[in-house]
Image 1 (tube, rainbow, N blue to C red):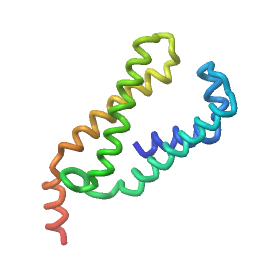
Image 2 (cartoon, rainbow, N blue to C red):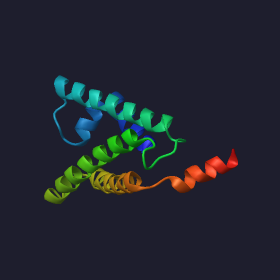
Image 3 (cartoon, rainbow, N blue to C red):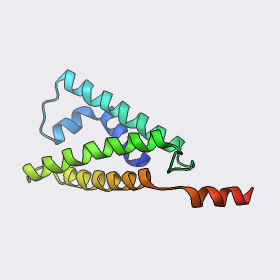
Length: 127
C-alpha cells in the first residue's frame, strides 16, 4: 500500500493539472491546490506505511496504523465502486483503482482481525 499511495501522492503533487485534464475536469487554481494537498496526504500516508513495514501487525501491535489504512480503503473502495458502476464510461484507471482499493480494504480488514501470536512467538524463540 505504501508504494501505491506514494505513487498517487507524487502524481497528485506534481501533475495536478494534467490529472484534472485526464478526467476532463476544469483545472481551476483552487481545484489544482486541492489535488496537490490531497497528494501531500497520500504521500504522508505512504511514508507512515513504509516506515512501519517491518513491524509486527495484528492484535494490539500497530493497531492505529491498521485502523487508519482500513478506514481509508474501506471508505474509498465503496465510493470508487459506486462511481464506476453508476458511470461505466469512466476511464479504466478508475475501474482499476476501485478493484485495488477493494483488495486493500479486504486485506486490512483481515489484518485488523489477525492474531500475531505465531509471528511474535517465532521472534521470541530466536532471541
